[in-house]
Image 1 (cartoon, rainbow, N blue to C red):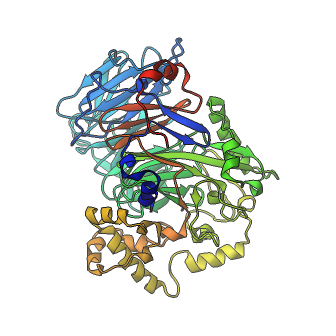
Image 2: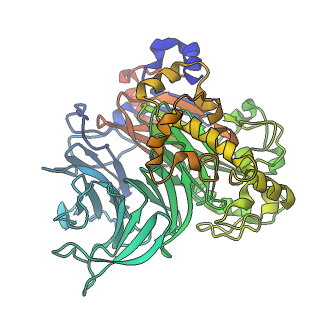
Image 3: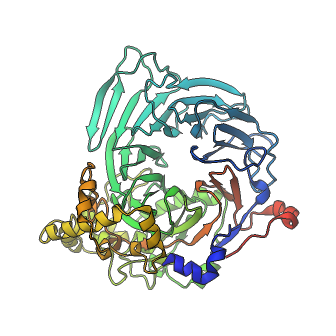
Length: 605
């Protein structure tokens, strides 16, 4: 459906053109070609078999007013530059620091924002062979190497992050499915660590390191089945969201070491995860080509987004475009033209006030705050998608006159089946809102979902777990449907993309199945997808709203690996090693006017 629509708009030839600008309701985003960062010679990197290009930022608060620093890895190389953003062209001839590694490649990195100064920064770098290095690219020092002899874990480091609010603690995840908590002050020991069980739960266990003196790792987390692909701390640092190759999102209370809730992908592994600015929603993306929005409060999927044609590699919320309007949600409707007139203010004040104003939603004020969350995603299909998460999705029971921009709600005749299942969630109290949101008190249910408890309970009984009468028939129908979908070859999937009536937009029941014999392939895994589909863990496609992207643009030749939202721009990077800066509307400044003559003509849609 999407492909046929695009072909109708611009023909097959234009579909392969790289976009250099795109328009949303707040204005035009423009690619600043002279603000592109890469290796000094600008030669495209031969990316076959190498680890994804990643980007980290830090502000060192120097006196010049240009305190932003950028770090990125390309193949065996790691670069550290002054980041000039939308203000000045990038000077690639003068990296502050450059490192080339032998025998191993950098896979990820993270700055400690608490300790960063103009004279010194602490940068953690994870490697493909399992080590973690602590370096200072300003002083050009290598202070420490963790897991040096690979005694703790021999697999690739998939994600490394400083624990929020700490100057010395950091967390590292590996392709083995394990996570380790380190302290930079402690050593790692000369023998493989011995562990003692601290806590165990559904598909996870946490061990402490058994030794006479304190040594690294402080804790070892074993999570799920297969690689742990990424993790993200909640805005207040109290909760940890992890996504794994087994297709599960698991959210933990980090300090209490307890599982808060889980979600299962439609199929395949989950690759990326992020939190909304107020910690109320988590977005995950992965090998099902979807972005999935999960409610932290209700521990359930509230929406899925379909726009990518391949795996989703990064998801990120845009704190600066998450808009908060103090108006009655009943009036939260209008035409697309009306929305064009709403000018969205950008700037740090806006982002800082967003969090405080979001909390107003929790007061019992007679005029609730309307909120729109903006998030983005990039994928292996070389496309950037932007999404809006609006009131009609967050609170589907409000009687809106029409849905908000680009929000395609399936089953529009009635509330989504998933919406009334809140009371059947066994991880939170559905109707009294007493569970602890990261950093935010919860919204009384009566303010957001004006429906009787009786309706919710009756719906929960019938559709909460797929049990009850007729459950066996439904299970077999789901099983036959998912076996066909989960075992499609790449060729089959490409064929389906050209099918005008794209099957993935519809329910699993619409997919005709002749491959029940393939079910035994699925049943070998610990969690049979056929058993999770149709439950709260993984609702069917027709049971939750399906978002359509605000924009979906091809912006690179190689798969995209980075998406970061900054105050006056957004930053993307592809596997060729090119880091691109996209100026926000009205933020182009002098750079574009100076270089307009020499900039390549881009396609605008």
